[in-house]
Image 1 (cartoon, helix red, strand yellow):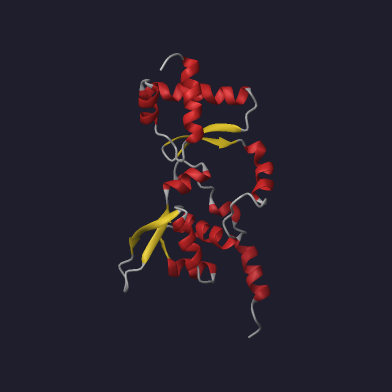
Image 2: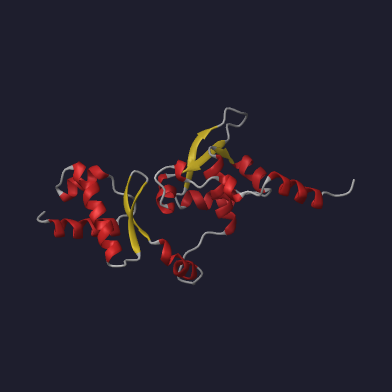
Length: 189
């Protein structure tokens, strides 16, 4: 391929059409540049997106590069997500996804115990969408399957690794609040 402008245009187009993050090695091969030049080209694309006030940013995720929406446009995307055109995942499936993300590997029984309800339908939906997958079997009677998140999960959340998940402690009330809630709802006995 020719000059820098052509390569930047090609990079942007590739990252726009991809369904999963594209690794450095693959970008280098397609763009006919050295692998160590990819980060510089991606950084240049990122600056150009910033300079033109784009609603997109380029970010590393799940071992490769992809375009994502800029944080400032998220309120508009949230409104769009509530529209009939947008495809949504149920609250139950989102709860199961959170349990799997933070407790993996986790079995169906463990998910049901944490949520307090049967979660089989939500698990099947998340498997069908490719966000979770069976990652092993427990060495207990019946050898139940255990589930974990997939690279697609990382990619959809814009994370490079599971270590990038926000700490769960940031979203859980302190122990004394939980104790007070339990006391409030505990039946007199």
